[in-house]
Length: 251
Image (cartoon, rainbow, N blue to C red; front, side):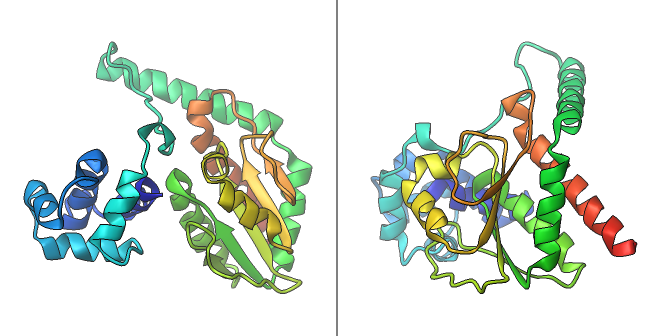
């Protein structure tokens, strides 16, 4: 989805970079872009047409027209969830206190109810795997990069899949697929991805906060007290899993 491709740029670029500012403008004006030319979009965004074209190509589109067509099919209601953690009615100090308190509450809730046996099984699968593939979309994508970076420290061959699972992945018997999906947004909004994921014949694990998500492999359900803080719970679970891997490596 176009929104997820733009979110990936926003997650990796510095906030003062030209790519970040351009991607942010495009993300906020999808409905406008869907009915105007490349020249008009560039003028309104305040950059050159070449800049827009380059960014569009970096997202995997053949040209601006293909990007514009994707913008036309975008529905705001179908966008990746965006948590609103600060209240307009509260002061900054009160918002900071409230968010910090809720974050701690959710991490403690997750810790007390975490499936430790499932975590150990997943760690065993990771350590046995010859090659590891990680799938994630939207706000989960940075977690995939974080997990890959950490697993590389243990000389693991790790690849982050393309966003739509369109490549023809042919895993070997000792390969492992890890799917990160905080609340199942990618699977729910794009049934084709769910079909591709479930058709993969390999050892595969899903890490999610949504216990009702249909999945044809193993799963590790991360408990969360408040769905708005699910991303923090997933990150906490990954930190604990990586700590267990480090402990076993040092033994």
